[in-house]
Amino acid sequence: MANPFSLEGKTILVTGASSGLGQGIAIQCSKMGAKVVLNGRNEDRLNETLSQMEGEGHIVIAADLSTQDGLDKIAAEVPELDGYVNSAGITSMTPLKKISMEHMAHLFNVNATAPIALTALLVKNKKLKKQSSIVLMGSINGCCIGNAGSSAYAASKGAISGFVKAASLELASRGTRVNSICPGTVPTNMLKEEAKMCSLEELIEQMVPFYPLKRLGTVEDLANGAVYLLSDASCWVTGQNIVIDGGYTAA
Image (cartoon, rainbow, N blue to C red; front, side, top):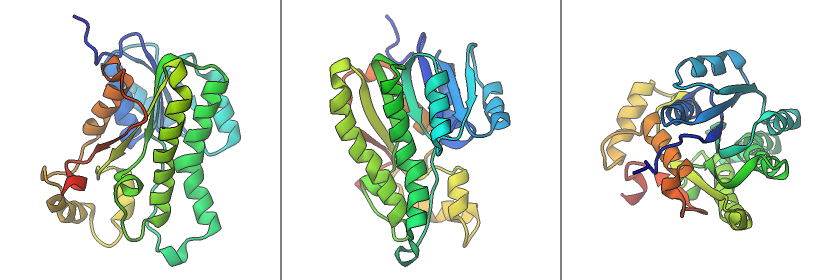
């Protein structure tokens, strides 16, 4: 019997593949048999990800998705895709009274505008095969909960949740599925940026009691969720914001 979770024979684009969740997703996709197109701004770091991957035929495309030139380069150079995962993103802890137009523009450009615009370009350029799967990176912050000091960030991730609902309907006629993953806390470089008042270890220790499964997430936890949404195992799943949070939002 064929393994419905296998990505054998599929070509998958992963943005933000130079570090963190994107790197982990790219590596896990390769282990499941996919040919992966790696995107990020730094070619050396993308090659570092490439060195950890299994299989052959992977492609590196260095481009900045926060620019129109970068988006155009990706859309022009990628082969036909069976799946696309957007993992490029930034975090921000900014009190409401300090939010500015410039701050909002930068945050939305990276977290919402770029992945939405790239999705549109891939569809327009006919780079997504029928029956393909689009997986965007949301967050429980903006989809399910809010945190003081993260209003702008939550708004940018909430935009992804809304886009998933509408885009899934628009692309359903061609069999293309659109979903997002909404993670709880995963210790990556983004979390380090939030650990300004204490060490990363102290921050993790403070957060663990709020998670019913008594640990924070791992890159592998999220990568496995992405593999599920990219695989044929989820062929009847679309328009969903999938929460992977160790029970945080259930508590």
